Amino acid sequence: MAGISRVKIKRANGKVDIKYRITYRDIYGVQHTSPYYDTKALAKQDLNKYEKVNPKSKNITIGQMFAIYMEHAEKNCSFTTISDTESYIKNHFNKLFDVKYEKISSIDLERFIDNIAIEHSPHVANQALKKGKAVFNYCLKHGLIEQNKFKPISKKEVDTSNTHFHLEIHELLNVLNDCLCLYPKYFAMIYTLVGSGMRIGEVIALNKEDVHFETDEPYIHVCKQFTKRKFLPYTKKKHIRDVVIFDDLVEVLKTHIEKLPKDCDLLFPNQVGRYYNDSNLRNRIWKPLLAYSGITKRVRIHDIRGSYIDTSLSNGLSVKFAQGQAGHKQSKTTLDEYARNNDAMKKKAMEVLNEIFSQRKHM
Image 1 (cartoon, rainbow, N blue to C red):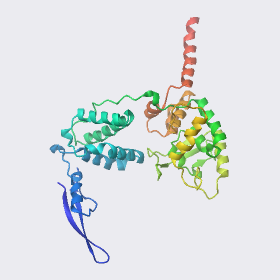
Image 2: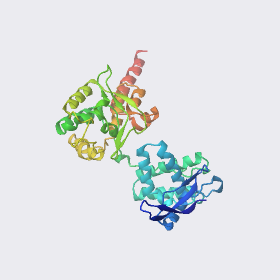
Image 3: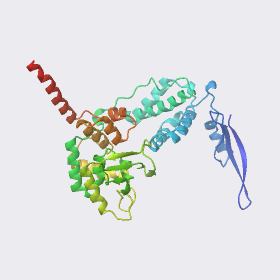
Image 4: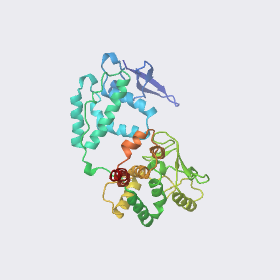
């Protein structure tokens, strides 16, 4: 059981402050203390968060399950995953925090997800379902619960007419040429996104010294990111990689670097020499650029990665190459979540199939 203790804290001027804190044990039996509270009432409000979790007693609350998962996530998951999960906790799951897991059914949880779909969108509901399953699976894995009650719940149907799309190769080239005319200052950055498969946060965080022209196979060293206005000294999957760059992109980057101030370390600094705000880049550059190029389908700046993978695969490059460029730990992610059956792939497939089956007439 967690308990509240009264603590006297002596200041440098000799005055004594009275504070309160919660002493508790985690699921492994290790004792901890909470941060200080100004009043006992405030400590009581948070007492249930620190109650000892005993799998055999079946008294674990959904709030405790999320707290245990987030402790794990802070050590093992990316900043983006942690930030997104915190957002879903704040906006949705906190309504369930005081509910004991044994008292809730999968039907209750399904209604909870249905309400999110109604109040927000099927996409938000599916993301909430994904987060819930991850938390419950983690607790199931460690024996805190006996079953994942989110498991029977199916995804909500999403209107595919409003989904995001990739760009075909001719569309990519048109966008690049239009960028050179409309936003020449951003051309090198957009070209790097289009021609490398890197994430937007990785491109924003690049330094000049990360680009290597001196080898027979020029490359960009990717080891950090700038995302949600925060610099992180690692990539999303904490995977350091060297991204191969081709001759035309090499020339563009060389010219771009020559024009940069000598005292600026960043490869793509903003007007005051700092990191770009990725949100501004999306809304002030990418979206107007698509409109200027006559692209009416919904293409996020993140979808450039998928477009790059499509282009690589449709032109005979290996899955392993595309996987390495994009920085995926598994080729399954490259194929299942990013690759699309684009026009170039269909055309090439038709050519191969025509050649194979045309032999029938000569038999």
